[in-house]
Image 1: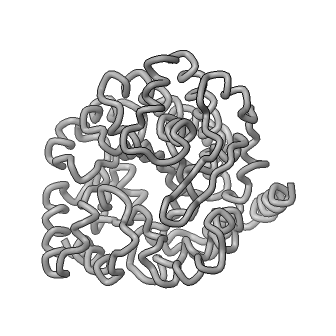
Image 2: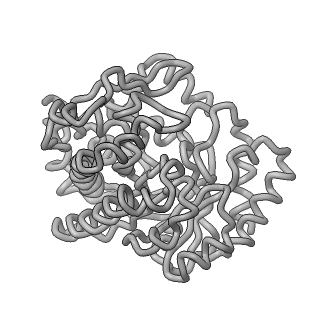
Length: 368
């Protein structure tokens, strides 16, 4: 309740205080299909363990304490912007704050990653979820962090907000953490299709409210992570992922418009969904992120000329010597082209990466 009150006070205060004017709008222009003077680049997990300043702060605080403390989340969000000539910041948070908002315990265990000690086992467990969820009450700390960052960026670059997509969230909630097979979650799709769709709709409703709240707090682009799309295949993707992804785009954009906010572009990143690019192109998003296994030329053919592409350097390419890495960055831009394109990795940066190689990649993209 204290966090919610802080968020409400901030919203009232900043209602009468304009955000600083945006100085670098390349990301937003590229997302909308407008001309850019150079290719914009940001990096998934750019605020993370590969940065020594992140590790220093992380050593003093629990992961979710950082997420839930706006001052700390804002500081980590800004760290890579101070170091690199990136074209966007992305709010420091985690996709699993949605299950937390629904009443599930989520722990970040060292050497393991996220653990949900009491996963959903059978359909009757859906009744244990705290629904409907008031995201302003449960996740107001994310909105507060977004508002703080918008002001502290001083207009340097736009700020990205995000959420996990329903299928990906469902997977964690049933598997109890990460999985190499997603077999428990996929078993639900086959054994309990109606219950699966009920759960996916609960998550969809929460994600919609959450993303609208982020836009209201100041997020200038919204990305939806369908990180576990690779486990589905075309048939399951069309039935259990795309309908909810599409509903999120439609209702978030309508909700933003209804609140009188400026247009906020949306990105969908469905890792491993090479089989679903045509469907994604029709899902209502401005930008489609692709992973490193997808040929950019083939992706452009699949999605058509009216959608922006984002990606897709292999994260492991950052292990290469800097001269090799810079060539790979330049080659990537050549494949995508300089318009309707946002440079990124094909997934998140790894925690043992040398920060100097991030700088080399950014310079290569901007110089292409």
